[in-house]
Length: 83
Image (cartoon, rainbow, N blue to C red):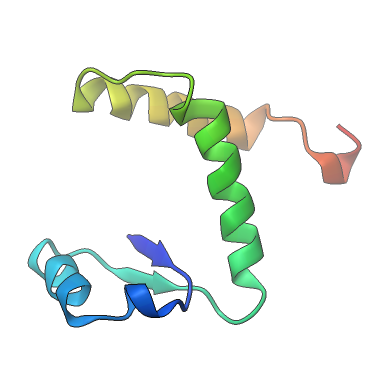
């Protein structure tokens, strides 16, 4: 899945052809609400997983990503629940 907002740089033939070649589904956020949720999630993902790690193989990335998603769903403190 390839998620983007409605910016024009993501609405072009080259990106559409590339996604189609690899059978990747495009997900566009609904104006104006979905983008805030996606942006917040991506920011957390980058700061909590990506920036502090180096992935030497795709397998290593997959394992750490599965661990991260499990932690996110079951153990991550939630501001909406007063942490």
